[in-house]
Amino acid sequence: MLPEVTFPPLQQPTDRGRSLLSTIVLLQLSVELDELLDWLLTDVVADDVTAAETALRQLDDKCDKLGNH
Image (cartoon, rainbow, N blue to C red; front, side, top):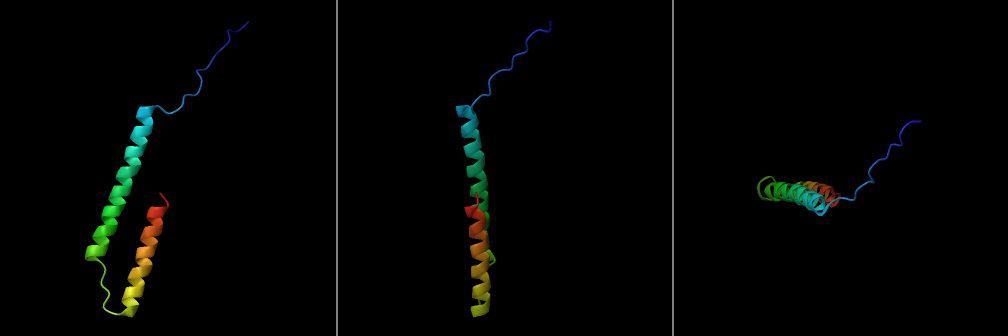
């Protein structure tokens, strides 16, 4: 007869693991917010209504991307 094989129970994430994951997510969000701010301060040129509408659509897209995190 073969010996019975047992497996350890699935473990819940540890406090350290949750903390690490939270830190990674916050760091990613911080980088993306920094990129958004940089874009707002340097890349947005709205000399006319069409340019302003284009910039607003781009801002909406970038904000939607941030909202998906």
